Image (cartoon, rainbow, N blue to C red; front, side, top):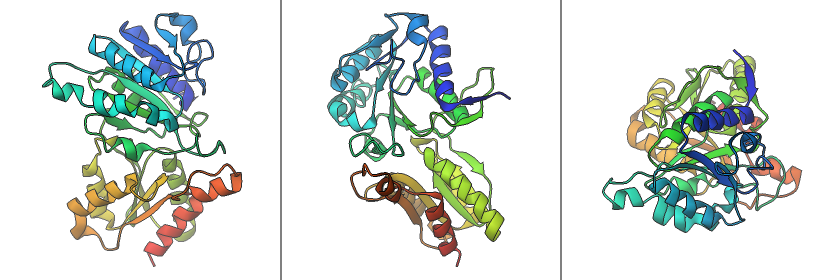
Length: 325
């Protein structure tokens, strides 16, 4: 199977869906001529023109509001918010309009809207361009939140998101764009709301998502090679709706859980994951749930401090070893 980058996989998904359905169009800041801040929309303006790949003013509130209007009138917009850090600028539109309108109209309208954005640290871009704010979003009923970790998942999930009749926030980690993986040339879709067991194991379960999947798999390989510890790694892929059934099945097998997340520990996504495990699999736990999470600090600009503020392979390995003492 061919090997392509995460960026290329996303670009292919957009291209294929635009070719398949003339109602799909893209808009956002610098996505047309420039090709997007991280190059995901490169070449699409040249192929589809000004009416389907549109550069917008610098106004996230207007971008999301326009996307909602387009979705309600029969189009399938894919709007880009350049950094998830800017999601606060459009939170009224997202929380009070996009997420609620289908419910408030009794299901008589659909909102086939995808909001692409990117988050996470790793490029030392400082406190305004390095946040992981997915926990904000999973608190909003009425939207879906998707965070793929591999090129294969990114393409299949983005295609499914574009075809979905509900609003979806699709979060891409800035440090994944250049990662590579196998992606088939033939069309495929990945269902939203289904987790993936990236590695099977029997001693402990790691539940994670996005870039932390890669770190967790590296840790699992080290632990198996050096300590003989068998780690199961579950990639949630979708945070809302969350596939707790796959997680519970793993917990019943390993009886121990570590949650690895890049967002801040307090009120983070891991807190919700952990509580759902307690509600559904408490009797199967042989040890308290452990969270390896981002620090409760604004993301530092310093490369040394930024590295300390987010989980890494060593911290994951240490957490597993301490749990199994």
